[in-house]
Every structure is written in C-alpha cells, then in structure tokens.
Length: 207
Image 1 (spheres, rainbow, N blue to C red):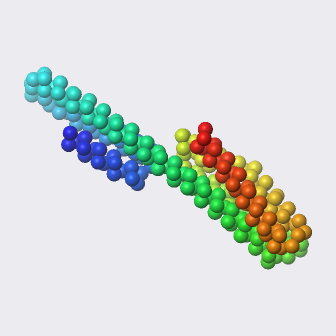
Image 2 (tube, helix red, strand yellow):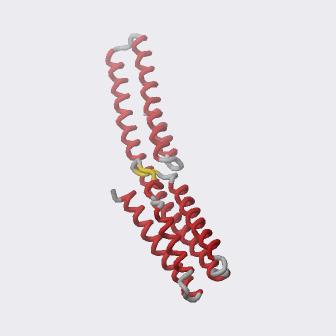
Image 3 (cartoon, rainbow, N blue to C red):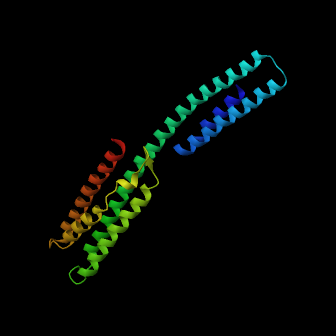
C-alpha cells in the first residue's frame, strides 16, 4: 500500500507541470516499477519456500495496486488533457489577437505616415511580407499544440495570407481619407481574425 501511495503522490505532483504525453509516459514507468518490485518479492518468497497462500496474497496485492493505479492514471490523464485543451484554446485566441494587433498597427501607420502613391510598389511588397511573417509566427506558436493527435497548426490555411494582404492593399489604395481607411483596416482585419479563429476552434474541438 505504501508503494502505491508513493507512486500516486508522484503522479499527482507531476501532472501539475507536465504535458499529457509526459504524464502518460511517466505513469507507464510507474506501473512497470510496481510490477517489477512485487514480482521480485514474489520470487523471493518462492525461493524461501513460503506457503502458497502468501504467494497468492502477493499476487492479489499486485493486482489490487495496479487496478488502483490505473484508476489514478485515468483520472490524472483526463485532468492533464483538460489542462492542455485550455492552454491550446488560450494560445489560439492570443495568437490570432496578436496577429490582428500587429497587422492593424503596421498598416495604419503606413496609411498615416507614408506617401502611398509614390511608394506603391514598396508598400505593396511590405504588406505581403508583413502578412506572411505574421501568419508563420502564428503557425509556429500553434505547432506546439496537439489535440486528439492533430497538430493545431496544420489546420491553418496559407491561402489566408493572400486574402488578407490583397484586402489590406485594396483598402490602402481605395482613395478615401486616412481616417476612413484606418477604420476599414481595423474592421476588415477583425472580421478575418474572428472568422479564421472560429474555423480553427471548430476543426480542433468540434470534430
């Protein structure tokens, strides 16, 4: 019983700062450890010609401890999985919001402080590079998360790069006053980000 309690405490402690996969591997090691220790005790008892009843009790103890440990492991893994899901949801929200903020900031600054008509080719190229860079920052951040054996980053769509960039460039050069264009940039980026993040959440958590 003391062996089981020690392993139980270690499993519960490890899940606080460990990923789902780490806890699963560690718990598997603990199960093997329990089996090995109890089997060694069993064969020692056998070599010492202890009664068959004692050997049977040892086997029952092994079985009982494994059943209890499996119960703890199942609960622990479910808690770890819920923790990882919450972290992933937060990462998706923060990642998309960060992308939106930087796109709005940079393009709004371009409208406010640059002579867009004289530097059109450079500005257009810079917007494409900006969107591409922000997309792959998001891809890199989300690639750290895997839910139901699916890497979250794989659900991003690189066609979004062109869609966002083309829309931003069209707004920059639509001929309206600066304040109107900046407001349009804010609205358009917000719409895209809300749409894309919803798509990702649906693909990851609702399938």
